[in-house]
Length: 414
Image (tube, rainbow, N blue to C red; front, side, top):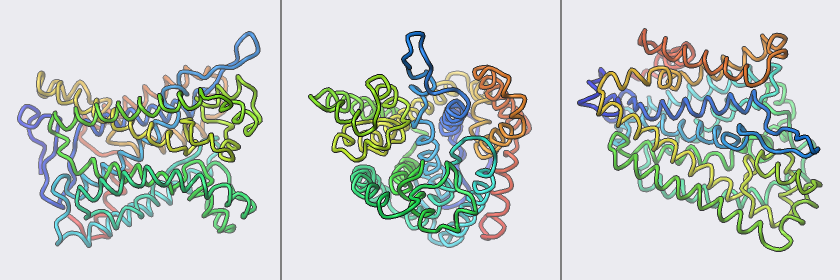
């Protein structure tokens, strides 16, 4: 199906039959670009900085993007799977088998790419192996009805952080080593117990919890995202969840003895703990105390952290879609073209994500001499220029085209 005029089709939606070709929602691509820029920011910019008095404070990159960007990235992967499988209509029964095979092939291709990127010298926790495995886990849910998906997503987000709180300390004591490096690589398969523990519980992106983000995205992708009330509902509900979870965390941590117990568990002084609760760094010991359940630090896996980043992701997606709907309603095709650098980059997330990691490795000698903010700006400008180019020539990103072509050919899907 070809894309219709923006005035007739607000938000740039590409219409599809149930279970047929994927749909394109401009707000989803815009939100993907936000996630990309956020992940580039936390990969390049420092998360804390030293002050003249010898203390530290979190940077803006940590305060805005840490934990939130990667969770948004995964939630939008779920939205993408929903759109690939028919959007609000769901998949057609006759195409379900080829659709599942298509997703299976995509999952393995992305995971293999992740294994390769994990070998680069970037000091980045590469998410693509986890991303591919989340695709695999989503296959049984791909034809589930919207209401059931909503219940599964809510239950997963609420319950698995509690299971994580109980299970992770036990795994740490039972398995040695219990954690691998920042990024999975193929050689990790030689230590299967540690590999599985790292992926599910003890690593940077514990799949036990993070699958909830993908399920939430699947549910959201089954909504009529092209309708303004739906986008507005996502923005409001996400904002309430994000703010409410942060306020709850602040209130709990204000209780007598809370911060003292956390300082003892993490072996951090007062300023160190204050910074860690924003950056998410150096908090491993917190899980050994019940006050872990009160924190909302990024990548902690605590219940309030999971609720907060989920709320942020929903709010960003809702706001992005509302902006796209407003611009295309007022300016038509011109409004859509204004967004080309952003939506073009967002439609090529795999290419941009992999490309920036390769560039960080290849040009490490050059980039080492550049101030971090300058390097970040260079990467963002390059990302937006690539997005503009891809929109102008009306092409997928190179890696997106490769994955799409291989998956479609091998699965026999259309």
